[in-house]
Length: 337
Ligand code: PMP
Image (cartoon, rainbow, N blue to C red; front, top):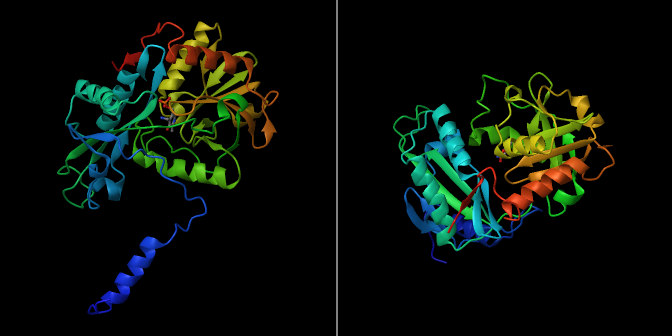
């Protein structure tokens, strides 16, 4: 090896070794990304490898990003994007809350989502639009940092595990609370809200649970690290209200609509923690989690420990609509082609 001044040879050798070393974490897995797909990046379709940002971008240091996540289903009528307009409306709401100027219109972003699926010839996939403060200067004041918008599409299986939708998941009440009102805006789907969510998820996983349920700052049930929650208690369906620091979930909204359609009374009200344990059915909702039954909480069995009848009926109705087996009576689907 050529001799480099000031210990550079040793440094180069160390770096070479580090590059060849196997990842140290026990759980190292492949990224699962299809790096051949194209990403919509600030108005252009670019190769996966080109969709990068500078390490001195504002977002890296201060978490200044808002994002969305939703599925495209491979329905009987071809690929359909689920509640596209509602997700893009929420993206713009999140940006408005954080005073992030959006350099594109809603119509442009919606079209870009369709284009990403089309161009990559995808059928079932998950879309991830993100808008963040880019590269300009390091101060907390973000006003001179340009907004960057990107939309990626990826394959994403069942979020809480392949068996979760049928068998249900084992979860715990998290030791971390959801943020208090007037600290972080919970109605915004902002990256910064997912720092506590990571603590909740990690704590759950380390203790062999699938997910954690956060309580709000008053001790009432709020939501999972990436899901809203519903409880069937004495024949009525309860879900925490927006004032319990939840994200206004779009699958939550679908679930309320479908449950009422099935003749079930739905009540948005504060939920005491102990109601979780004595409910007949408890389930999560989310774009990634869809409608996932919870079979135990803190090792207490919920109902008879299986997917409950109402949860099953809601799942059936949901999948019948997104898979094109039932009419899209609510206008939830945007065809890609
Ligand atoms: N709460 C949190 C914290 C989430 O991350 C999500 C997933 N977006 C949800 C609830 C469910 O929202 P949606 O049904 O819109 O995906």
